[in-house]
Image (cartoon, rainbow, N blue to C red; front, side, top):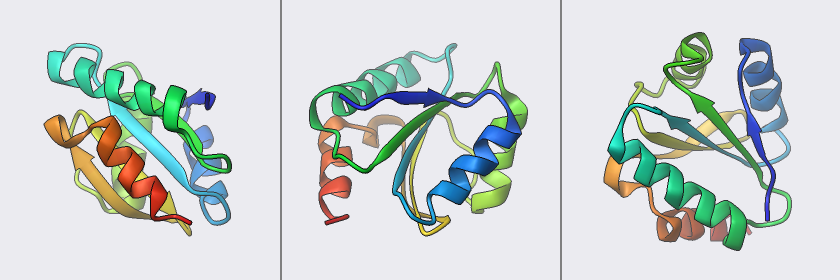
Length: 116
């Protein structure tokens, strides 16, 4: 099982983005007010608990509660904000993203298996 880091401050996001230069990161942007996001969160956690690869960092930002962090993610990656949304970060950039119903444990497994 992978630990999931909760991002609550922009500085935490900036550190995680810098870490992605050397370590892949999977980041979930989650809305606690959206039922689709609740399902995406469940899929994300299923992947993190059962299929997480060693050496991959997992993180989550609650987009309503921590809007400045969510905005910084969109600005720094150039990926238009959606919620729910998952980003795979590698070498300081987003190399894959999915939103809404496309966020599944199977999709996350497929993307992380390509990191090899």
